[in-house]
Image (tube, rainbow, N blue to C red; front, side):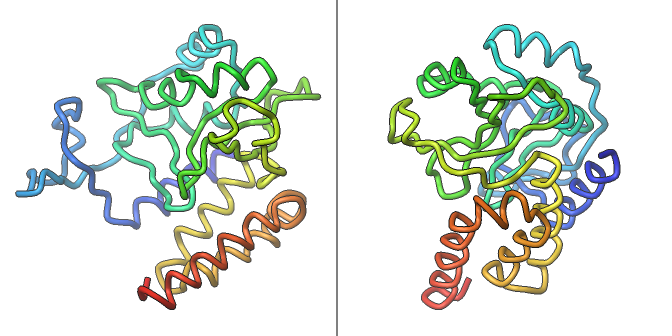
Length: 225
């Protein structure tokens, strides 16, 4: 798992890491001055959070995160983590758990956390949160991942099929996506998930990712990106 965490951040680092500046950004994360539009280039810095910091969040919201997700999130401080198809929670040293808490502290999580569905990220097309499905398991090492459509207002009818069999497999798919889209179109890369995660993206999640592929291809044909 350690290797995948490093591989993920290396792949993400290959993108141009720019964000809108806020007063929460420490100087040590800045690789450039702020441009006329308010953007700046940032860099990763080593994380200092402990597993106990996450336990406090879990206790407060009665949530459970898989161990490997915690290991991933606390490895570095990073100002953004928008992977296009998935928006993962960033972590600033001035407010390291703010994004993680934001994913838990609103109406929909209040409805679905008691059911064992733990929001941790956001779907790239704004459909709703990605959730860890902690139901029917006592294993805290990893959980399958689904999407919850926020328009269903807490009803389980808004829960998708499993789109990734685990957080570990999601990282593997994102590493591939971030790396390969440097030279290939997104709609060409996404179907590779079926082979990388045959028990999740390539099984129950295939229709979900097929719809993404179709949308990305249509966008490319109409807009050129």
